[in-house]
Length: 204
Image 1 (spheres, rainbow, N blue to C red):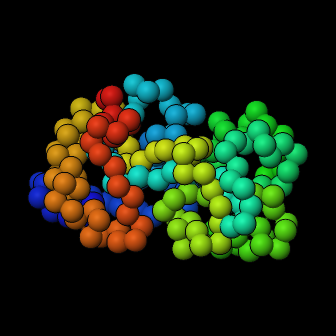
Image 2 (spheres, helix red, strand yellow; image 1 turned 90 degrees about the vertical axis):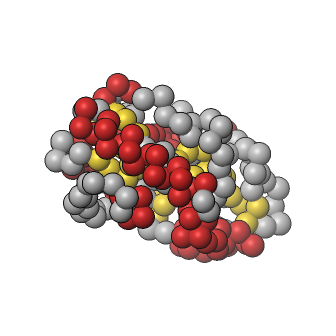
Image 3 (cartoon, helix red, strand yellow; image 1 turned 90 degrees about the horizontal axis):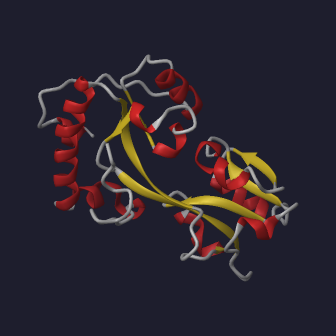
């Protein structure tokens, strides 16, 4: 963001909160924009109320089991089983969990979830790539069956002022992505995406 904004005649005032507090501040109109994904906000806003920037990055949620186990491709395979999920990710995963009888255990980190999986406490865990990459050597999953593919973006209330800002910002972000700056900054946490991938260019 700092690289992109450096070429624009704007000044950002960024305040950092835990995810739940950040969502509340944005929902109450105390902030113009929020770093988030559309899935985390669409429960409380209509599509016309929000506008989105070009992605700052991509992430995908998967079901993970231990390395020597067969991958699990569907949440329905975990009915009545204990599943570890990092607290705060319910904003993304609610649509995938609400119609199933899972015993979801909310924890503070992927590291703790992986440990609990190794101790046999969980049948599976849900995690996001790239966040869970440091533990992939211990895990089994099905790359062809993501629960969710999404993007980190700057999402703003739909006003003329914010529309003008996001139009300029998206142009700069896209240039940084195409110049390889995203990959340089993110390093091993970088997840590739193309402009023609579903959801890259927001409708608004």
